[in-house]
Amino acid sequence: MNKSKFKFDWLVLPLFGIGVVLLLWSVFSATWAKELPSPMKTWEKSRELILSPFAKRGEMDQGILRFTWYSLVLVAKGYAIALLVGTPIGFCLGLSKTFSKTFDPIIQILRPVSPLAWLPLGLILFLGAGKQASELGALFTIAICAMWPTVLNTAVGVRAIPQDYLNVAKVLKLSRTKTLFKVLIPATLPYMFTGFRLSLGIAWLVIVAAEMLTGRPGVGGFLWQEYNSLIYEHIILCIITIGVVGFVLDRLMSVVEKRFKTA
Amino acid sequence: MPFLELKSIRKSFGENGSRTEVLRDINLSIEKGEFVAIVGYSGAGKTTLISLIAGLLAPDAGSLTLNDLEITAPGPDRGVVFQNYSLLPWLSVYENIYLAVDQVFPNWAPAKKQQHTEAHIAMVNLSPAHDKKPAELSGGMKQRVSVARALAMDPQILLLDEPLSALDALTRATLQDEIGRIWSQQKKTVVLITNDVDEGILLADRIIPLSAGPGATLGASINIDIPRPRDRKGINHDPRFKEIRRAVINYLLGAGGHRHTTVSKKLVLPDLEPEDLSVPPPMIGGRRTPIRRHEIKRETVEVE
Image 1: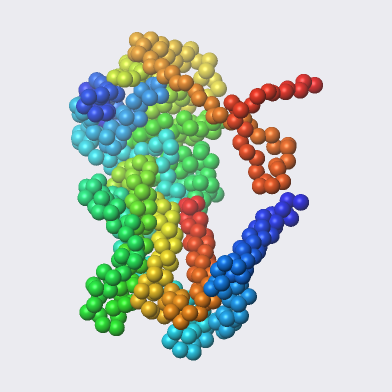
Image 2 (image 1 turned 90 degrees about the vertical axis):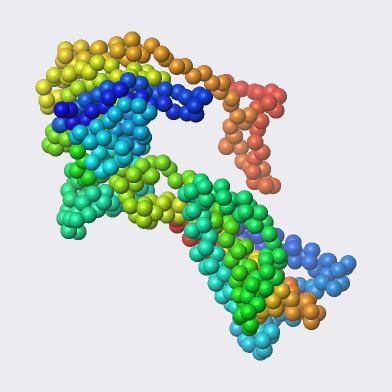
């Protein structure tokens, strides 16, 4: 009985939920939102993009997974920059009270700024880069927006290191680098990974905005293009794709995170 | 010339306005190779005292010297075994000890470091747990690793900060015997801080009571002239043991221990009633709502 209930919980109920949403969607598209394509229509129009997901027929006419792949590559780059910059800043914030008092206010001010506000600045910054400008601008935006959870979680993690571990380092007279690599970093890893996971979520949010505004090929760019060419079915396809990919990324990160939690 | 000497040490904590004096007038001298036990109440400042000797804290006044050198910072010449083990949870037993060995003897060949580490794991009978992480070990095993790590550093003095007080009585007894055995082999200078008078008398050459805080100070030192090896069961009937024990306890309860602090605290219970798990959960939602105590109108108690 227990086992069947388990299946009921994670399979039947979610499917039921999806069914309800699909039903509401059909009802809405048939009644007051005439412009909203129905689920069936969405499927029919998107079939080609889904069934040959890696096809490339033109710059802005490609399979959906191909677009997703472009977006993921861009996110990976921006995310990598965010981690490489954010983690050391987090360590400095956690280790030095002076550093923290100096920079914490400015971080708190920059943190809530929307990606839409950063992007134009990014584009201006890399104006000299010519063709590369839109990519560099997008990377800048992703990195600066996705950085904050990593920065703050790392700082919290460093501050939360038990005094015992620091005493061990002191009694053994570990050098600064050895203390960092043997004690501080391992002790902070669980917090860091929580930050990394949240950062990845934000990076994926930002990509869509960045691509929309720069018109780069990718799920976000494609979405905006289809809006302009009045193919509303594809907008829905993009939304679903973005959601599914974001969900999968989050799951993957939480698996990695759990591995470090036990340590 | 004493090996370790503390002269009129004073230490207080807190801000200027509300400073509490933890230790005052601490004078202590220990000879090389001596095993000294310091017993006192929890919260009397025992850990503060050992942190001062370890160099993790600096005294407000007075001087500490080890081997004629002023103690200013922590160092591997003083091996510390902390009450809460202080093992690094991401390293295995071997790695925890190897980290210390590698740090203290950087010039040794890797094979020698390895062999030294293994020897100390074997000394505390932990060879089977060699590759285990601290989370997989029991409290007693963790404390053995901690002892092995401290000894592997080959310190001039071993500081044991209530090493056994977090353990159950049986494990405690085993580890007491083990510490006694290791000491008789290595003849290191040892300072043992404990709240267990019997433990102090069983293991040490000298026992010194620490009065209750705030402003704790050391009482008169008592020589434990009971011949070694001391038998855990027999010692209870030794008249000298009883005498020492009475003297220490009298000091702790009497002159030195008068300033008891009592902490009173109102216990507020959560406004929740335990769930009855034998009643199946409701069909919809599958969750019970918490039962608030103040919402219960009437209670029926069935007596069979």
